[in-house]
Image 1: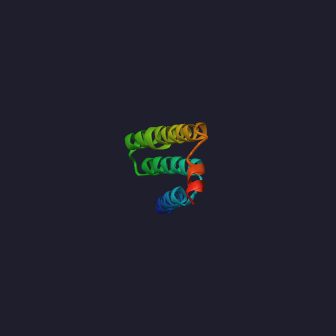
Image 2 (image 1 turned 90 degrees about the horizontal axis):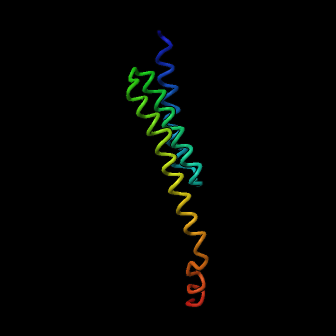
Length: 96
């Protein structure tokens, strides 16, 4: 059992790496995938810490539902912008 703390620190390092990656990625879809990885790693951490009920909740919400919701929202906002061909760029060029 002396190696158990190594696993704790490894998972905590993965949590930190996924969190930094979520903020550092400039692509929105990539940031959502990093957020999903963070939820997955947190699920593993909760299993290691002996909280299977919290791990199930984190797996459903943090690793599946939340990233799907974000991807749908990103997709909807991109289609709304792509549908509107005139974004006011011509007016700003005429004014300058």
